[in-house]
Amino acid sequence: MIRSVVRGMGAALPRRIMKNADFEGMVETSDEWIAQRTGIRQRHIAADDETTASLGEAAARAALDDAGLTPADIDLIVLATSTPNNTFPATAVDIQNRLGMHHGFAFDLQAVCSGFVYAVATADLYIRGGLAKRILVIGSETFSRILDWSDRSTCVLFGDGAGAMVLEAGEGAGSIADHGVLAASLRSDGTHKDKLYVDGGPSTTGTVGHLRMEGREVFKHAVGMITDVIEATFSAAGITAEDLDWFVPHQANKRIIDASAKKLGIAERKVVVTVDLHGNTSAASVPLALSVAVADGRIKKGDLVLLEAMGGGFTWGAVLLRW
Image 1 (cartoon, rainbow, N blue to C red):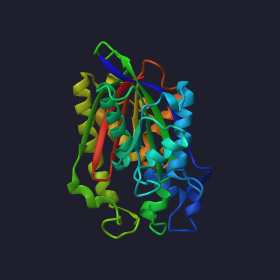
Image 2: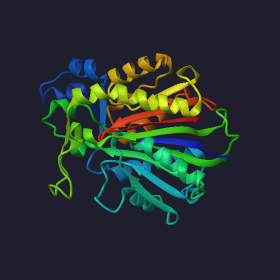
Image 3: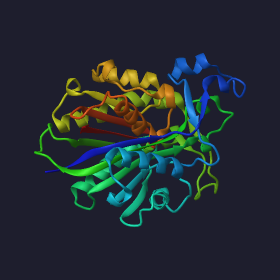
Image 4: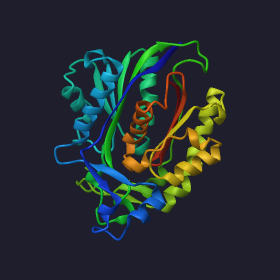
C-alpha cells in the first residue's frame, strides 16, 4: 500500500529572542511566575521584515535541503497558519512563488494550534489518493501580530516561528512496521469557540483583532481531549503507549504536556519538550519540536513517533508515524 514517508524536516525562527524578564517592565509578571505556570523561558518575536510567508519559506528551504530535493520536486504545499500575510490569497501561494515553484498547487489550512497535525493528515490523503507524490507541509505563525501586549494572561505565552516537513509517497506492507503515516484521528467542537479566539475578522469587525483566551477553561478541557484522540489513534494502529519511541505534543504549556503524558502512560524520557525555548507557536509548534529532536539525534529512522495538538475551536488531533 502507499504510505506518506517523511523525507526531510526544517525550521526557521525570528532573529529576536524575548526572555521572560523582558515582560517585567511591560505587564505585572515575572520570570518565575511565567516559568512556574507554563514552562516557558523565552520566545522568538518577528521583526517587521519577518512574516509568516518569509519564515515559512525559510523552513521549507531547510526541509528541502534536508531531503536532498528542490522545489521542482514538490507537487503540493499545505500551509497551516492562523496568521496569514493577507486575508487572501493563501500564504501558501506566496511561499510557492518565493520558492520559484510555478507548477502544482498550494493552499492554507486553518485549525489554529492543531493546524500542522491536520495538515499532515490532509497531505497523507492527497498522497494515498494519488493527487501528489511529494508534499511540503508547513506550519508558520507570527502570533505576535495578534497579541494584546497589555494582557499578561496571553502575551507571555506565544511566539513566532515556522517548521516544515517533506512527505513523499512510498510503499508499505500495510503493517505497523511500515515507514510513514500509520494512523490519524482529528476532532473539533465549535461549542468551545469563545474559550480561545481572536476578537476580529473581515466579516465581523473588519479588523485583525486580538487573541482572547479563558486559560483555565482551555486547561480544563485539554488533557481529556488530548487523551481521547490519542487513544483513538492507538486503537486504529493497534498499539499502546509502551510501543512509542517519541511523543511530540503541541508546545503550549508544560503542565498540560506532563499531565497528558502521565494520563496516557507515556514515559517522561519519551516526551519532546521545546516550550521553554519557543513558547506557544501555534501551528509551528509541532514541526519546530520535531525539527529539534531530529537535529539533535533523538528521533532516528525506524522510530515510532506520535504527534498531537489542540487549538482554538476547539480543534484537536493526533498523527502516528514511523520515521
